[in-house]
Amino acid sequence: MPKNNLPTLSTPPTEAELRLLAGSRYAFTTLATHYGEEIAIQVGILRDPDNPELTADDIAAMRPAREVLPACRRRGRGKQKAPVKVPVSLRLDADLVERFRASGAGWQTRLNTLLRKAVFGEEKR
Image (cartoon, rainbow, N blue to C red):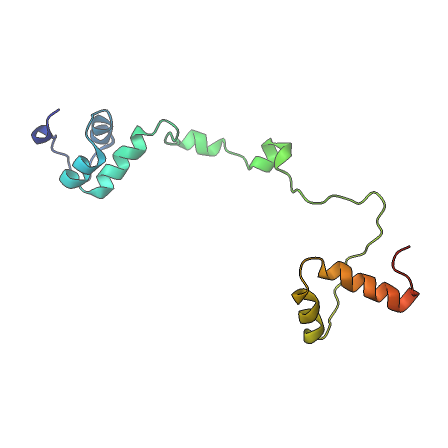
């Protein structure tokens, strides 16, 4: 179809008119110039084979992924085989925490080692 033969659309355009344009070879820029960007976007959506428009039946049949796929369940570290550490909430002086954080990654482990030395006089069990 040549550029000057673009069909006239009703306001707002009907689904059939948009599908007619989606089946044409007009580029996005041509459609946007002639009909406006919103119409060009709607035609682009209709042209996309990987993103079909959902019907009311499709939407009604949808379920959350966690109900359909067991792999979508929450992931995490999982339960420890032999729990040796316990998560705690502890309030420490800001300058102390700053100093340990400034020492780089692993600062919590280093703090644990210093506490162990102070309390038990040993590095590790």
